[in-house]
Image 1 (tube, rainbow, N blue to C red):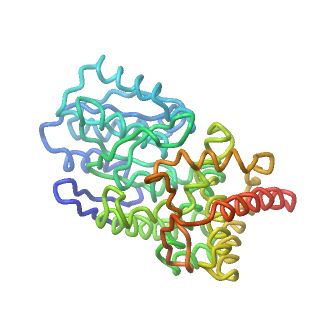
Image 2: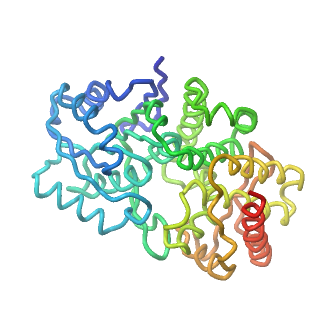
Amino acid sequence: MTQKVHVALDERSYDITIADGALKQVGEITRAALGAKTRKLAIISNARVHRLYGRAVEKSLKQAGFATLTHLMGEGERAKSLRSAEKALAFMIANRFERSDAVVALGGGVVGDLAGFVAACYQRGVRYVQIPTTLLATIDSSVGGKTAVNHRLGKNLIGAFHQPRAVIIDPQTLATLPQRELRAGLYEALKYGVIWDRALFDLLEEKLADVFALDAGLLTQIIARCCEIKAEVVTSDERESGLRRILNFGHTVGHALEAVTAYRRLKHGEAVGYGMQCASTISEKAGIIPRAEADVIRSGVDALSRFGRKLPPIDDLNVPDIVAAMAHDKKVVQGKLPLILPTRIGEVVVRDDISPAIVRASVRELLKRGSNQNEKK
């Protein structure tokens, strides 16, 4: 069964195709998205993903008449850097890619973000296609056109808005994910439930065991619903001037945690999980959400952390470093940092008037909570 979600952005519109076995349709979908004139594709991936899926993707693309050349980058957030982008750009220059050619991102969020950034930069912008292979990438980073690389002072500080021409999702790729990667993606899925859809939040809580058992129908349902939510938000606010900011729920503290640990310790989804707990505590202390409702959100994150290995501990970190990293967040406007705070499950508000004392106290509570979570396991 094939599901399609349309992202309506006038001339930048595109479809998200979700189907078991979609990797075999990559050539056909990519040709339809790019048109007859595109002859050469730069596939950007990493060694692990390319070993699993590179041959199938290249075969399908060649059957559709494309010439393909592959560039392999490193793994993990530390590989999402200007240095890595420069290497990919040098690869495209050396192989004489033209403006009518395109980029294919084959991998998780790190690959997709970097490949999209490279596509945005090369010859002032060439087209690209996203083929996400992790849950987090399928439901979040591959959709919406945000592309970026990290800086040591903050995450995603260097980037561009550059929409893909197509997103091709094959849920079968999730079967090869380590459990930690699957769980990291589920934190982002939980985020969509908190900001938009209580039914999705409840489904994740009720069916966690089935998700980790890789129930194909359930995974497809979750992926499609998350993509629908993001498509609706992005269609309303492509460049994050208003509504789209709610997608950053959990990301302000999460990005700070990633930065202060040099992008080595936490998967992005794990950092967002911690960030959602902290945002819920800030909201509770500011009188925006009742404690009982905040407890449900925090418990939802805890429930995910019970599957597989422990969440990486954060109790050795300190509050001043995390607060300082938050000050470098790309969402800062006129010196004020907007925080995405839940009012209830299914609804959030954007506030930039929260007392620094509340933020510090909430971060302190999060570090203690992170220690307690890992002591219980």
